[in-house]
Length: 322
Image 1: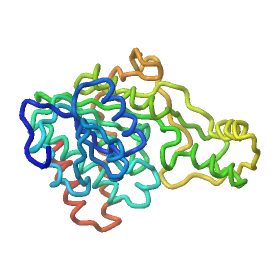
Image 2: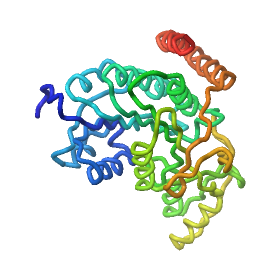
Image 3: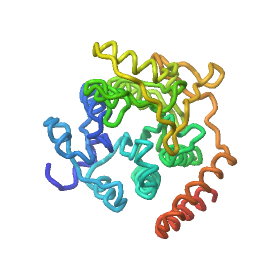
């Protein structure tokens, strides 16, 4: 097909972050469950090219350069977007908040604008449990994208959010870190004894995202409803599976890290046909929470003295309030 503009009659599904751990499972799911061709973008080009399927088209698109998005919408008639592309790890956002703001928030808002302009039917955004009562840069950026969805009305595109739990064995996941520490006979490092997190598998994440695409409606927010796992118990379980015991060392919280991720009560969510997946009963705009997060994110940008990002954040916040 080359780089020429494709037939207006042919519709494509765009996956950002397609080379991510979850992205590879989602590509497999969409190839099996739909007849659409897929437009795949991501940082790990080789991993996407390894798919080697006639219906998967790799396109270069840099989330740090929002102008690079335009050619995707010009060359392909995009029916739906699965926006997985992000700096998803908490530590990445804390260590480089400017990069995180550019990729996780500014780039996402540009994708929203282009989706409306090109009349994309469905936009599924993979958010995170970090967005709830956000204290980290990644969580705050994810929350503000969710918030942008809440304020969109009277357009043809359906904007749907799914907050994914921690994906087991994805790069940087605590399960991989623990396995490596246990294998090498090193102490397992944990924040503190009571720390807990929710987990899902890669295939389960793809199932949840696809369910949101099929059944979600505008401004729906899907969430993980499984109970959180005590991280100390997880470490001990992995030691048992690997038949090797090592000490546990408690190291204290990292910047932006919290002890536990609060679950959702039955009064807060509707159950879905997917075990472990619910939908918020009320996904409402919260002016106080939004203002708090906007102020904290601006403060981060000002501390790093990035005038371009400061200007862009002020512009986006003003536009959303308009």
